[in-house]
View 1 (spheres, rainbow, N blue to C red):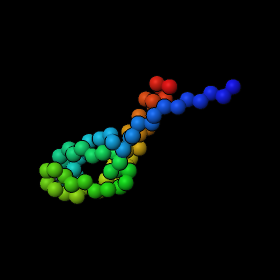
View 2: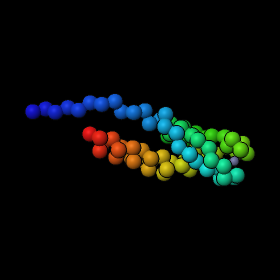
View 3: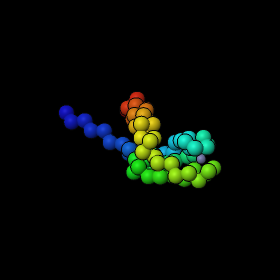
Length: 74
Ligand SMILES: [Zn+2]
């Protein structure tokens, strides 16, 4: 018996997480896609260019927790 489950994988790139500016400590919201692509974001407080690669660990942790949630649903 072949069992196939199909469901729409949500577009993780559109999720937003909060990161802290290393300079002024202000919290900024960035899309996961921006972190995945290792882009920069500009702090809305001090206009510092935040390199999102520093937040990859946080990104991976977030993805893992999302996957866990979906696995629980299935
Ligand atoms: Zn800042």
